[in-house]
Image 1 (cartoon, rainbow, N blue to C red):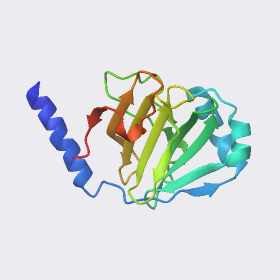
Image 2 (cartoon, rainbow, N blue to C red):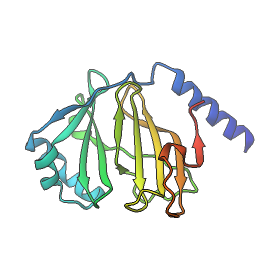
Image 3 (spheres, rainbow, N blue to C red):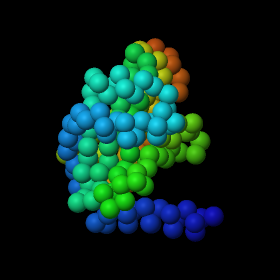
Length: 184
């Protein structure tokens, strides 16, 4: 068991320091209803939302990871304080094989929506995707996660924090107790 964990840790560290690690990518806004129509069945199957209304308001973002690989970000409001973000990876060499990306969470944490990142924010300087899911509107509980993308457009969980108790005491999500940290 130790050997398997050690091997996985070494492989993950190698991935982060290799050329497979994506350079920072700046999102570009796109507002083309034909894009939504191409992927709406995939979005509907992954997460129930009024994707057409959401798209009318915000369009989608395009992240170009290589000459051939793009990741499309679609967002839809699901509550007054949490917005669902779904990501579709498209390889221009195989456009009919576009796929919804899934996001890892620690085994002990609920991952009933692996296709969804809530309140996703791109850090253009680092290329990280951060997420803060509010447990309730006050924001005094929830989860915080950081995903780093490879140069071929796949996410890897770097950090996961959680504050499960909604106790009325607001804490910056970046200061929640650490559940998993692969940043070192």
